Length: 391
Ligand SMILES: Cc1cc2nc3c(=O)[nH]c(=O)nc-3n(C[C@H](O)[C@H](O)[C@H](O)COP(=O)(O)OP(=O)(O)OC[C@H]3O[C@@H](n4cnc5c(N)ncnc54)[C@H](O)[C@@H]3O)c2cc1C
Image (cartoon, rainbow, N blue to C red; front, side):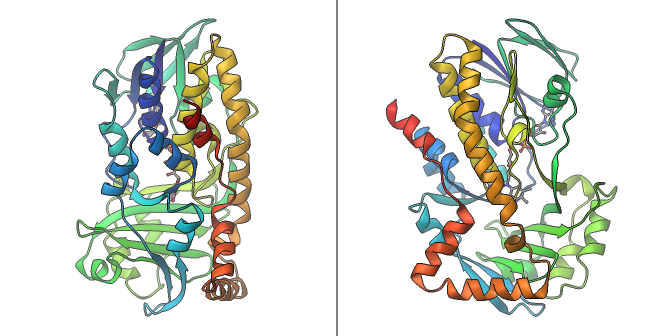
């Protein structure tokens, strides 16, 4: 089987490894000119962790990742107002948990690929022609590639989805988010080995001081605006001004817009994930949003489930149906959990903010602690672990 994968993000790279492992010829085409080095800190656990474990990747993830013990919610003077014990969240998933920068997770996946995977950067999918038994993909390079299956792992704004399934309205959750990495020794000293979040209403900045001396920042604010700003850096400086502590230094150090991730927070819901010889994977069909905090994990696990379904079937359509039947309920549950976490994630009123502080304080008691941690993580799926155990 010859498989074309659109997108060399977490889902696409994981699919490349899995399909190669089941004996397929794999071509990965990626729009970006090379691996992306910008990103944000990802909490990685759940079914994606199980998939990483099954493919021997977890030691490398722990090598590249960070062991974060807690998240501090700080006021405008940098004083801790509340604290989330990350260790207790990790306990709920039996310590099968690692925090890792997205580019490092992609790097680990890329390094794991066998040499015969044809990985092409600077090659965007521009057109898709589907036949009864094959699919032809036109690329921005002018090349055309033919395969037995096209996997659209090209993210929340998927081109494959638009070309094959038509325009789909995203479920907008009412937030904008941004992320960037910058250098500032003062901010780094204040945030080294510490995840710090501003304890604020309707807008929040988060920082983590990386081991290379840089600081990973993420921003989230509520907004009804469905447009993205033409200049994200200017927008961030305006929206997040006046939060105190190290925030003005972090905003001053924001890199040029080309190095800033900026997007709406949204989920993708589709009636079908495949059509003929084209199937969608990861955020392209199943974005859960950063509110659910599991998109990377589900992208990687989805790749595992998809390859497993196709390995065991003679008819491609049957395998694609099995993938969707088994995997959709897990995604739907994560999307629901993400939506219901919105006010916890970013309070809209001072009363909600104080309630969060109280709950986090209560969570220092062991029983309450487990309840809060389970609430944040949701009900984890054991599907990947079961599939891996039967092999
Ligand atoms: C601030 C933030 C924090 C997050 N925190 C977490 C967390 O703690 N835990 C977690 O599990 N998840 C988290 N997520 C979610 C997670 O990052 C995403 O769900 C995940 O990266 C999706 O991976 P993907 O490979 O499906 O899509 P993407 O990462 O979007 O990758 C898609 C790839 O396709 C490429 N592409 C696009 N168009 C084309 C085209 N036409 N042709 C070829 N290639 C194309 C893109 O360049 C890109 O490389 C977070 C997200 C954000 C924004």
